[in-house]
Figure 1 (spheres, rainbow, N blue to C red):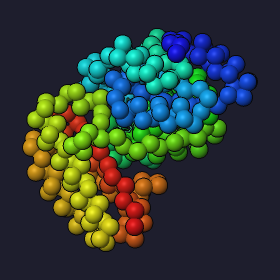
Figure 2 (figure 1 turned 180 degrees about the vertical axis):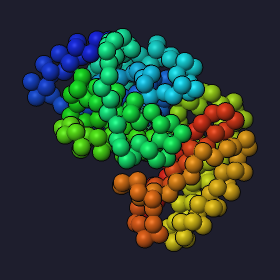
Figure 3 (figure 1 turned 135 degrees about the vertical axis):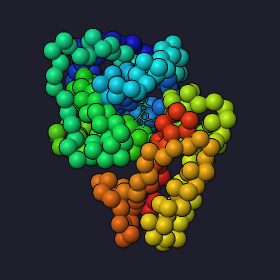
Figure 4 (figure 1 turned 90 degrees about the vertical axis):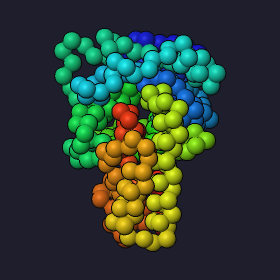
Length: 280
Ligand code: AMP
């Protein structure tokens, strides 16, 4: 595995490989790699000749009072995980190499970035789209892998690739969970053992909501019940509960065949997101 820090260096290496007809998979991450990230790497390795993993805590997707400074950065662990999973290139850019002093060009989705997580995190998806489009231009992947854990991010990136004519297949990968049902996340390290146990109640509540959806219950009743169940999780505070069309994130209607039920919940002071896709 080659570790590369400079964008131009990765670009050159990939250009040479693509000239030889190799396919390239890209897995963008912020590191503190866990089984969720590994599932993306494995999928990329199985579908492409070359796999690039980027590990970069992107400052421009964090709001002023968020956890940019505190975000875990276990670099040695991440290198080991990538090596063990047959990654070919680990891209570790720095703020200096990615954002020049005059950096002033941003990518923003004018519709999808304003809803759900975008309400309390207004600059978040602009930061994500900007860094992902940079990574697309640097790694020039054939396919790029995103977890459905960040469902809104997946839909926005897919839309961005379509809107801006990136010739890249954006692939969504299933959510990997702890045995308890808690969705794996680098931010789970902020939770105490007790809070982790409590937070598993979020997934249980989502499963119940899905069951009700499949039974044909009205969306407003499903939402009400879900709210009640999530509020029963110790120290929980709901940021949002949203039922949306799983394709375009429009507000879901009772007639919709495929709905994503997405939640953002603070457990203590840790903000967690999770979702479940329900199909009739
Ligand atoms: P992050 O490092 O949290 O920015 O995540 C990097 C990528 O891994 C994103 O596409 C996430 O959606 C994905 N990811 C994170 N956690 C999980 C999980 N539990 N299951 C599946 N994918 C995940």
